[in-house]
Image (cartoon, rainbow, N blue to C red; front, side):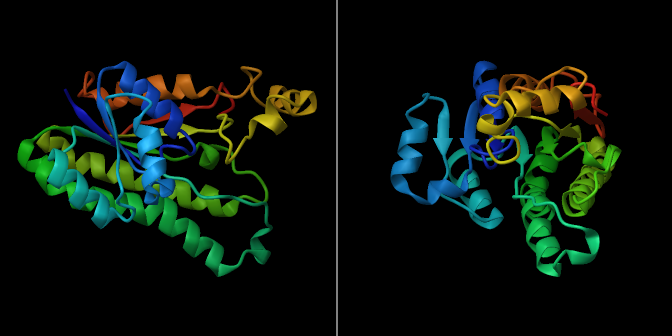
Length: 241
């Protein structure tokens, strides 16, 4: 059985990633901010026998816990999330950049640095970074996520070049218009007819992407079945970009 680490499993693409990986037969090592609570971890683990909810929160804690209990994961899915709000560039507080940078750029880089030496020594593995397709079509008011998601995408591509000689993959899944309660909540964009119409006017597929769909894509990229594929950014946008 292979072990796959997924971050922020209750947010963004996390629910789909967990289900997709479980369906492929992986044991999923799950990080989430809510797992500081013992009961939350127990309830999450009760969903399936192949789930481990990790107590660690910061990259150093996650690395130590995974290494101590499971060794080196076969794949790491950096599914990083941070709330966004529409703001004109001249009004963005510096702290907004700092907080978003820490959540969606620095933490996945730190996690990569911690696990990479052992993955290089083993000479196989896969990194999947869930970033954003926003850089393809920047929208007014969203300079912070557009800029910083692009930074993580660039890091993933740089990583791919360095680790390819060690048989390690690094790829990016870049969503937009994916159903998640953080970014496109069900009440506003699925249950509300006006929200559904707004999405249909923007997305050629006519709806939000589903968690099961992105989960299948993430599971494939994490599987190593197409090992020659690396350094790629796969848009998950229903034709929007």
